[in-house]
Amino acid sequence: MATPAAFQPLNAQSIQRALSTKTFGRMLHVLEEVASTNTHAAALAQDGAPHGTVVVAETQTAGRGRLGRHWHSPSGKNLHCSILLRAMPAREQQPLWLSWIPLTAALAIGRAVQVVANLKPSVKWPNDILIEDRKLGGVLCESSGVGTAHATVIVGIGLNVNIRRDEFPEELREIATSLAIEAQRPCDRTALLAALLVELETRCESLLAGHHGDILKEYMLRCSTIGRRVRIELAHGEQMDGTAKSVEVDGSLRIIRDDRTTVDIRAGDVIHLR
Image (cartoon, rainbow, N blue to C red; front, top):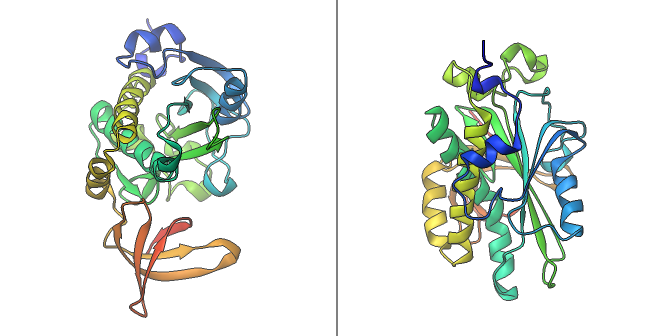
């Protein structure tokens, strides 16, 4: 009996047959094991890999999320991939573009999940993917040489796909989830990756063309942080409580603090308060 598509190992030929992108994934590296897809993609960039190169791995031995957190992921269950970006706007527009790349990637994941798994995840600012309040995945972007002729951005994506609840460490079972748990059926990772890459390519092209307003509108519709009571954990252990009012044109999160003052957050960890 043939292995169902959802449980088949990732395969370069199958992925490329499923692609409908112009550039993303046309140069593709599929690995059984790697320390980190972001680190591997950065090494490929150093060797001259083209825009849209994708690295995907069955397992990462040193996968990491935002703020240096470890990403738990058993082999063959989930999706870990990194996309190399070289196409960038003019130097003076790069700071705004860079601030929107992680948020844009989160939107692409949300839409791909909706298309493939018929679920509707939300985004917790800036780029955590949630179902209800459980984390489904996230984005880690790393840039190099910005402002030079050799600038690159690596968009790293981790998404829980077919991991069962009992396969999560006990401390994660109430705060993490997967597509298989939520949809109550396994998900084809090849179809998911193909959908993700076309959604990301489309939005990156829109962002590069200066259509930040369109990305902002879409983000506001998917962002579950807006209107929530939140706690912002800043650097050096500082905390700030307030209500998330909006996402601004530069991608920052506007908070109305409990003393009624307003502050725009550009970096920090957001906790949704009940």
